Length: 383
Ligand SMILES: Cc1cc2nc3c(=O)[nH]c(=O)nc-3n(C[C@H](O)[C@H](O)[C@H](O)COP(=O)(O)OP(=O)(O)OC[C@H]3O[C@@H](n4cnc5c(N)ncnc54)[C@H](O)[C@@H]3O)c2cc1C
Image 1 (cartoon, protein in one colour):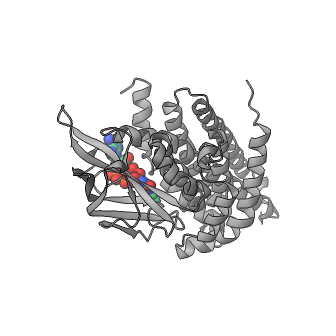
Image 2 (cartoon, rainbow, N blue to C red):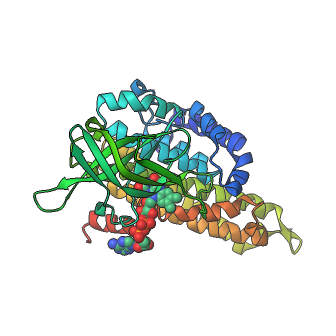
Image 3 (cartoon, rainbow, N blue to C red):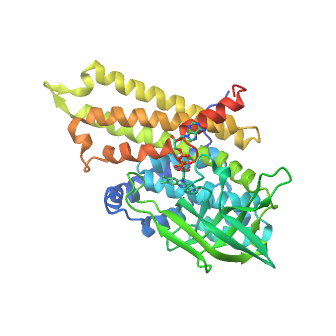
């Protein structure tokens, strides 16, 4: 077995880490406080090549593998969850469906600017009454002549209402199957289409500098050709997209856990009580040892899941495991890290306070931890 990264992957890690330290770390706390999406750092992330990471160069992508994509996401998350969310959702949820299921014309039309980071795209699955039960989509799309007429709403959609959002992929009911169940299809809807209203959501606990939106469709008309792939394949496309997306959420958990550990180790060595660094007390050194162990295990699991995907092997189970485990490792690392910071860890001027809040979304977004356990239980034959 060879656990070493390629030279390209090592170089990528170094360059993204340097970028995150120099460009994101100094502004992350302030953007979080103001709940502000930064077009400046977004532009810089695009220039660095953080979008279209797994997309072929033919469409202006970076043509990298999933291990590389995970490393880049991990390094951004090590410094800030909001920016990592913009990257992870931009790649997996925004670009993914168009790249994997789009027609040649749709790819040529949308991917070049999405891959340069000039535009973003939303993934419209969740609805007010269809969260974990995503197949219960209520949004409808009715074919009238050569147009789909869309009515309904979506909620919590990342990257869907920025000034550079070019559109959204929306899961819609397009009919009824022979077995009586709803026929679900994905439709691409450009920003600015009459009948589409986007509302940015504020007041989040976490990812406060990431864009989250509600979408409303009121007789929103798009051309018939905006159907993504075959009619009736929408739910499958969304679930396939989430399999890949879970790897990036896993990378966010891993990177966030590493960030919490790095902050905790530095602080524990510097902070003195009873005349010595608090890391000298065995109870604290053991916390740091546990964090380090958990991060190492999480990294092995995530990279293995990415490797399976890169090698065209089944990876759904490992992706769900990596997403679940990495987000729970970050939960424990954030908790330990705040504990090691004492009262200061509860203050906004200490970055660990933001990590502690940002962690929670990882156990909820792209399938809650309970849903991941259901997925794993089914894949191991227990359910
Ligand atoms: C900041 C943010 C960004 C997001 N970005 C996107 C996005 O870009 N696109 C998108 O489509 N969605 C997005 N989401 C939505 C996210 O994926 C959903 O919030 C998530 O899937 C859970 O759905 P829900 O919130 O409706 O919770 P519910 O489904 O109502 O779940 C509530 C609780 O019940 C539990 N539960 C539900 N069903 C079961 C069951 N069968 N067995 C056991 N427990 C169960 C859940 O685990 C959870 O603990 C985002 C959410 C947030 C907060």
